[in-house]
Length: 145
Image 1 (cartoon, rainbow, N blue to C red):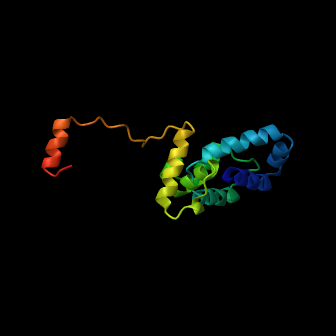
Image 2 (tube, rainbow, N blue to C red; image 1 turned 180 degrees about the horizontal axis):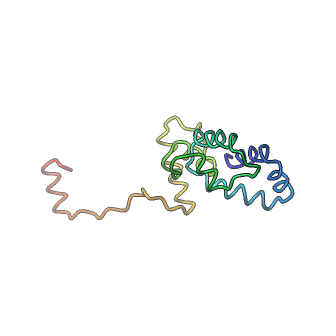
Image 3 (cartoon, rainbow, N blue to C red; image 1 turned 90 degrees about the horizontal axis):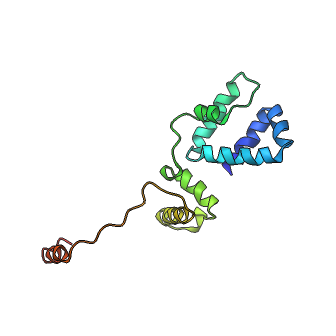
């Protein structure tokens, strides 16, 4: 999980943060959940860039989630807008991209399972109203439909 790796790296860089997290398992679990939600849609490349900026920052204090996201640069994109987002969301749903020959099949299943789990996605097609019979017959005769 990306969030757990980010927190592990922050613990290495900030020993006081590590002590606090290691002494409170509930806080650690909550931190992983919050970082996972916040990092959703942030590319691995942007996260690496955030750590590059963090290494030269002259502060003994671990950054907050919003501060670190700012270091990662760019607008945080929802998971459905990046390939990395689909891969990460697929893992969360128990779907491995390597089980698919076609990326489109993987993406379709991730979308389907996300919706089944109660997630609302902005691109879900609404059911279209059926056209009246007369329009369908006319379209068939005209070879339009």
